[in-house]
Length: 219
Ligand code: AMP
Image (tube, rainbow, N blue to C red):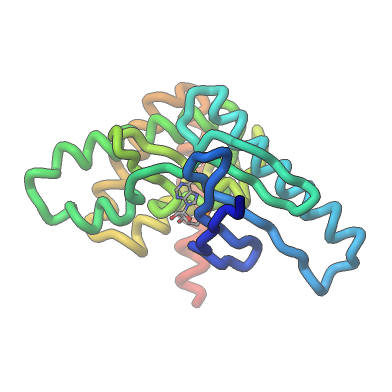
């Protein structure tokens, strides 16, 4: 029986389909060839990227961080099949509810949850690489699920962790009003949960911020 697939995102590196896997609603993420690269090199790099993405998800999942369950890695066609997460992105959730006073406490709890997840992730040396509120799904059971490790990698470097947080801060600033307040809760919780690592990342984070400010002033 043919399984129907619906394209939900066409990115620069990959296509994302909603599909079915063994009768379950699933996501298929297919990386495509880069025509400007030597074919044998392209094949190797694409395969490596697929493995890296899956490895980040598996490591997070093992550490108790919610990520979609991996169903299958097809590294002939460069496709990762994973669980479809039912819910809405944190971006949509904030946009829909941020102006509603009744949601103030709920949103604070959500920001704390994000800080806790990121601390856990950095403690196991996973760098997400593209932290945005679109890459976090608020699942129907109210838990946050991290998605899209397409730029993810393993690193113990404090700088990489600080930049990961800076990317998220920039995403907050460009997408949400009151973002300063929201991100402060994320960062504060991150620091609480990341222990000594948190102090080091925070120091570096200030430097990264300063660099960013200088760069934007320079035009
Ligand atoms: P990505 O390129 O991995 O960020 O995926 C693009 C979009 O597909 C995301 O912004 C989500 O809306 C959706 N998506 C990706 N993975 C999942 C998933 N596991 N469950 C539900 N939706 C997903």
